[in-house]
Picture 1 (cartoon, protein in one colour):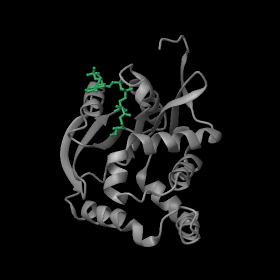
Picture 2 (picture 1 turned 90 degrees about the vertical axis):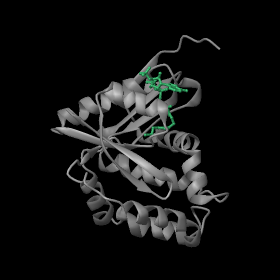
Picture 3 (picture 1 turned 120 degrees about the vertical axis):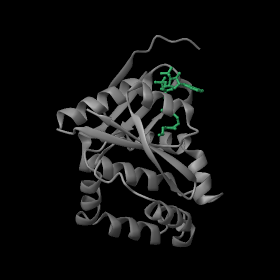
Picture 4 (picture 1 turned 180 degrees about the vertical axis):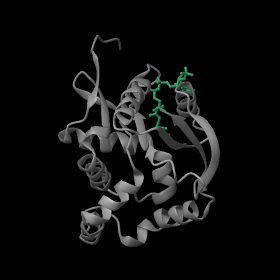
Amino acid sequence: MVNDWVLEIGPAAEEELPAVASLFMESFTETFDHLFGSRWPARRASLDLFTFLYRVEPERFVVAREGGQIVGYAVTPRSIRYLWMQFLIRGYFLRWGWRLLNGDYGVRVFDLGGIFRNKLVFIRSPQNFRRHDAQVLSVAVAKEARGRGVAALMLDEGLKRLQAAGAREVKLEVRPWNTPACRLYRRFGFAEVGTTRDSQGEWAVMVKQL
Ligand SMILES: CC(C)(COP(=O)(O)OP(=O)(O)OC[C@H]1O[C@@H](n2cnc3c(N)ncnc32)[C@H](O)[C@@H]1OP(=O)(O)O)[C@@H](O)C(=O)NCCC(=O)NCCS
């Protein structure tokens, strides 16, 4: 269907995070299947993750809207180390732990084994990339809006914001078989500097100077 809705790229509003969480889950089905099998956590868990990222650094959260609907998001934190610190200092691990035990996520601790195994493989794999602290953490575009440059526009905005915040280089991890994402990042001048892995397979690590 052809429409003349205007594409809008800009900072996210907190009320838009439920739509972002849904888009995240629709866009990474392979990863969810790998980590959780047939027992996916409720959207509430993804929403809590994005709410945390948003509240720590709202200015790193860019969305694309079309006809008032969210059709894409890009999260580009200034510092992954800072995020981890905030996760601990603000007590999110307690909050999430409580919600998990309370059944709010629709899964039991036991169902999260996939995440722990995944992180264990990641931590054990050679990590020579820690000095790159700014990161393209997550980007996704709704299926019906793909192939029209939406991701490119959001990434451009996210990288400009990072540069304005003083970041000099930015890192990302991408599955080598994710052709659209690899093409997107290469077009932006990201260069592969190595590989790492988790339980789902290899990540290509790419870096760009800002
Ligand atoms: C990766 C993703 C964000 C790209 O969004 P998009 O808005 O379609 O991206 P763009 O329109 O800016 O196009 C990006 C590149 O992908 C290419 N592309 C688009 N669809 C493609 C397809 N089906 N097969 C191969 N390449 C494709 C485009 O040609 C473009 O490459 P080019 O600049 O060399 O021409 C989107 O496919 C997506 O949400 N995928 C699922 C989530 C994901 O994998 N996120 C990235 C994780 S690192």
